[in-house]
Image (cartoon, rainbow, N blue to C red; front, side, top):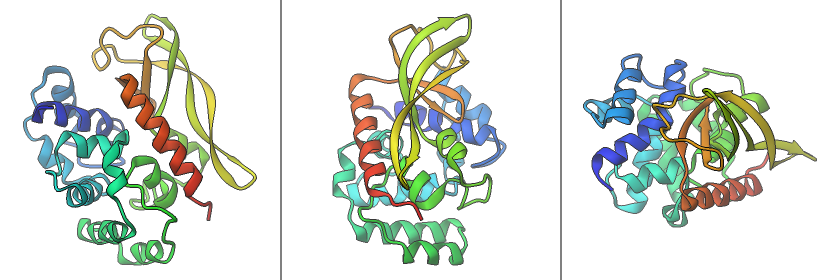
Length: 238
C-alpha cells in the first residue's frame, strides 16, 4: 500500500471523532476529507500526532512490528485488526502506557491502568474502547454502553438504500451476565456518498461515531470480526 492509501485509511477512522471535537485539533477535519476524497494528504501526519489515544497506539504497534508508525499495516492493525496483533505481549502494554504518558495522559489514570493488567494485550481499537475505556483518557464522553457502541468500529451488511439513507444490521456490543459480548443491532442512518462512493445493497460497511466511513473487503471484515470477538472474550468488566 502507498503512503497516501495509509493516510487515507487513518483519516477515514479519525475524521468522525475529530469532527465531534473528541480527538485531535480543530484544523484536522477538512484535511481528513481532502485526503479521503481527493488523495491530497498534506499535513495529515502532523494532525495525527495530536490524537491523545491513536498516536500512542501507532507508536506502540510500530515498535512491536518494526514498521513506520504511519505504515498501512500499523493503522489497519489498530482500526480493523490484522496479524501484527499476534506479536503483542504484556510488555508492549507497558510500552503503550509509557506512550500515553508521553502524549499527556495524566499519570494518575495511567497508574490505574497499570493496576488492571489485561489477560491479553490486544493493540486494537475495541480493546481501547473496553479496557482503557472510551472517553476515560480525555474526559470527552461518559463511559457507558451507548458511547461504547458509538465509538466501536461497528460493521454490517447494507440491506437497503434510499436516497442517502441506508439500513444495516450492525455488529455491536452488549452486556450479558456481567460480560461483554457481540450482538447485532438494526441501524438506519444517513451516509455521505463522497466518503463511500458506489455503495450498494449487499456491501459490508464500517461505521464510527455515526459515520459510514468504509466499504470493507472480505478480509477486512474477517479481521474485524475475529479481533472484536477476541476482545470481548478477554476484556473484563470492572
